[in-house]
Image (tube, rainbow, N blue to C red):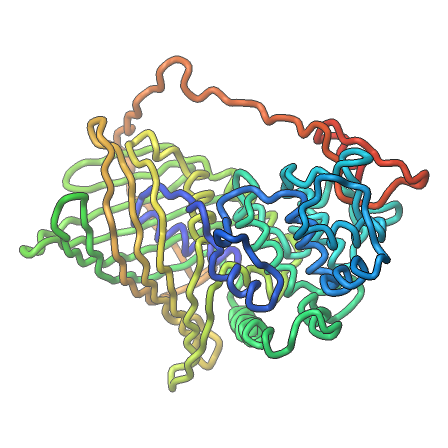
Length: 492
C-alpha cells in the first residue's frame, strides 16, 4: 500500500497543515517484545533508547541474533574462546570472545576493542545482514559501503523512518524487523530459525508469530489496491484543542478530499468545514495543490505558497520499485487485531512512534513550515481501523490519535494539545479519482520571514577516525584500521 498510503497521508496532512517531529524514543513497545523473547535486555536504568549504541552493545545483539548467546557463555567458561582486548566490560566478554574466536570481529587496535565507540547504521545493518546469512566478504552478496541500501532492499531497514543520529531506538527497530525477514537461501525467517535452534522458546515467541500472521493477512487483503495512486474520500470527525493555560475547545470537522500522488506529480483538492466552540462557529477552508504550489482560501483570503515534492516523489518511486515483503513495516506496529462482520473484515492497528518519523519526513519534503512559527508536533496513541469488504474493496478508515504542537507566537513559545477521532469513507481509488481545479487568479504569495545573516549554516559530518568495522580479519590475519567513513569497508 505504499503509494496509497502516501495519498492518504497527504490528504490528512493537508487538512492539518502542521509541522511534525519525531520523538526521542519511538519503539518502546517492540523493545519490550524483544525483551520478552530474550533478545534485548536494556540497562540497569531501562531501555535507554534515546542514545547511540556502542560497539560492545552491538556485539551482544549480533550474538543474540545469531542464536549463540548461551553457546558463547558456555564456551568462554570452558576456555574455548578468548579475546585480547582490555576494554571489554564483563557483560560483553563472552559475546566479544565468541565473535573474535570465530573471526567475526576485530578491534580498533591489538589490545582495544573500542567497546565505548559508537555504532552507526552502516555498521549495525552489516551485523544484522550477517545474522541473516548474507556475506560482505569477497564474493559475498553485499559490500560494506552498501549495507544500508542492501538492508533496505531486504525489508530490514527503512531509510524514511531512520532519520538523524542512529540510536538504540533504531537498533530495536532494525533487529525486530530482521526477525521477520527470511534467512538467505531459506524459506524460514530469522525468528523461525532462532526457535528451531532453541535460542528462543516457542512459547515466548508465540505472540510475535501471531502478530506476524495477522499482519501478513492484512497485507494480502490490501493487495488489490496497493498500487492505487489516488483517493477520493469524505472525512468527518471531532477534535478537542487545548492551548497552554486555556480551556479545551471542541471542534467538528468534515472534509471532502481528493489526492493523486504519482511518480511524477502531486495533486490535491479539499474542502473542509470546521465548527468550533459552544456556538459552533463555522469556517470553510478550501485547499488545492497543483504544479508544485499549494493554494488556500478561507474567510475571504486567498494565499498560495510553493511546495517542492521532488524528494517525496523520488521516495515513492524508490519504495515501490524495491522488493515488496509481506512483513515489511511490521516493526511500526505495536498491535494488530481483526474482527469479522457482515460488512467484511476490520483490522485494528495501533501504531508506534514510527508514524512521527514518516510524517516528519513527508511534511519536510512539502515545505518549511517552521518559518511560519510552527516548531513541531508529536503524535501519540495513534490507532486506526480499516474495513475491507468481502469483495476486497477498501471501504472505511477510522483514525484516533492525540498530538501536541509546539509553536512560537510573537516570540514566545507555547504548546497546543489535540485529540482527534476521525472516520474516512472511501469513495474512489486510482484512476477513478478526478480533480477539477478552479481559476487561481487573485491568489497572493504567502510572505515568509527571511533568516538573519549566519542562520542556516551547516556543519560537516565528522569522520570516524580510528574505528575498525566489526568483520572478518584479512587473509594475513592483520587488524585493519578505518580512518574515515570512506575506507571503513576495508576493515569490514
